[in-house]
Amino acid sequence: MSVLACRALVRGGPLDMPTVSRKAHRAPTPTSGGVGIALGFAAGLLGLALVSGAWRHQITADAAQALSTGAAFAYGFLVLGFIDDANPLGPRLKFAIFTSLSFFAALALGVVLALPFGDGAVLKLGWQVGLIGTALWLFTITNAVNFMDGANGLSMGSVAVGLVALAAIALGGEISGGGAMAACGAGALAGFLIWNYPRGLLFAGDSGALFAGALAGITSILLIRKIGLSPFIPPVIFFPLLADVLLTLAWRAARRRSLLDGHAEHIYQIAIRAGWSHARISLCYWLAMAVCGAIGYVAAQHQDTPAPWLALTGLAAASLVISYLVRREAMKRAIAETP
Image 1 (tube, helix red, strand yellow):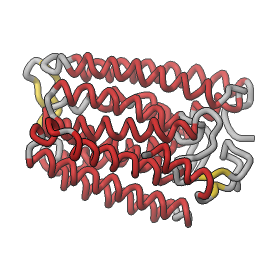
Image 2 (spheres, one colour):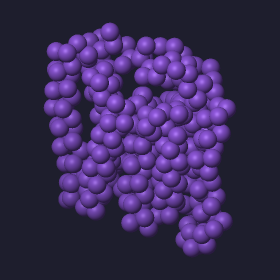
Image 3 (cartoon, helix red, strand yellow):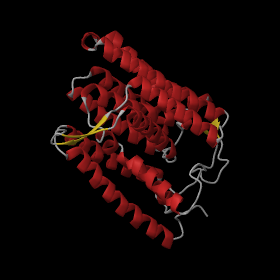
């Protein structure tokens, strides 16, 4: 379904005009591919409900309700993105709406109340801290996916890889709702990538980026709440996207630049200025996502040990070194920032 819907958007969808220098394309390109992704996701869930009798009998009423609630909030982010595609919102208004959606979703899906460190060590967060942390996770991953959606296939393909890892964990934990959400999301994104990678015939737009990011964040929350997945695992799985965004924001903050203004200082944007093709960059990120997905899957099988948080700590240390080396070389070549 997403393949067909995206084809229609290629032929008659709204256009993304290259009006700012940080955009990587130079010709008007059909956008709002998120509509096609969302239709494909809905078709996948509907197909499971109608065709798979085993899935209908396996899923509990509680899991079905959680799945419906999660999907509803993902579509809320889709609508926000579609509005922004049609009539760009100011950064402060968008920030306020993002924050509100994230907090309401955290309240509806369930607040994460503890951080297990393995060997029986658990940090109790309390309801207020847990609410802020749960909302912050959804806010951060959704924004990260949106910020990284600047090279053909990079962001949407990375989310698809991450959702496959979450689906594998979910199915291993015998939770059909979370597994269905992750698998249908990955399938819908794969249909979109046919038109986006590598030629960029269709862009996801804010609608697609926010929808995909919300699927990643919401599915993670569902698995944490329903099968006791360690809260450290989702950041491990989506680490390549998160690391690029968070370290770039830290880079800008250190130089006292606005964190709300658009820019072109991400690692992948530096790679573009270095002459790398979109296809090469996306493949590198997909490979990194696959490695992190495998690490996350293995760590999820050993949640009663310190493995999850140690994996995240190790990745964080490695990313600091890589970011420093890349930016140092970029500064030497005068490609760390847009001229």
